[in-house]
Length: 376
Image 1: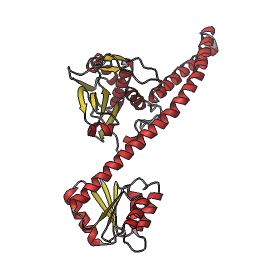
Image 2: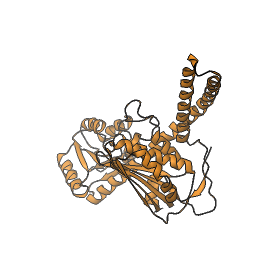
Image 3: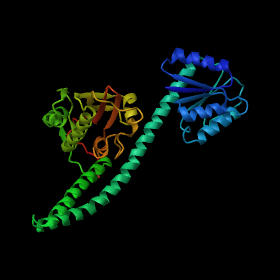
Image 4: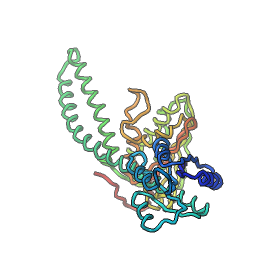
């Protein structure tokens, strides 16, 4: 948690520092004694929230707010105005219209200040999730449209090249070239199918299944994927509620996560897959973009190299990969994301570099006879 305090009074800054050290010990505080210095710090440091004084020489708080909100690098940062001046309602409205998110007038209790900071952090996190979701949705629409049209072209290329290959004797100098065209068309078709999965335009065949049984039946295949130097543990809740899923898509999802874990543990490690029931309340479901209710909780954890914090927001983007050129298409995790969204579920990631990564997947539980699964 990063907090920037902008105030021309050193006494006020010391009071804020003491308050945060006492009530928010995990917070990192940086201070600025002028609006200009605060703008530079906000742009370079990217704090989670800004505490701003209104009455400052040279550049007052109103101008600071205006410039912060005009800059794309700082426009999303919540601003809490804190002033000792007797500000009338007209100037309060002015500050809020310029982009301030909260207005506090001294004297203010430490608990009230901390409470407002926590509210701003919740708002910022919610906005970040919304922006990320909208970005992936836009990418999915674009990718799906391109993949659909490109797939039609590939059908013609693959069909005619296969016909020519069948008509060409194996000793013909052109046979090898035609075989390469056919193989390339197959690889391209596989990529377009991955994009269609990410954009949720792949047709699904839903059926009622117990995730515990489904995952355990796929265990042998996962062991072959990860190799002998990685230990696989499978922890299954035998009382897991059934779900309505496309079995082949869930298997594809597990395969991609297993491959991702394997690549994160080149010298070996531990891969753990668990299934359990989860009853999500509103405060737990909302950050995941889900409705409260019963879900199947599937986790895939590894003890690999982990994912850097700055990379985490990008891992589900199509074609994003940290692997060397030629060692990954960057579509594995985007396919996982598309499959889960197509099933009405959600996925979250926790990772610590050098320690490992855990993917938490929530799929709607279903103990009713019929469920309609989203398809296009």
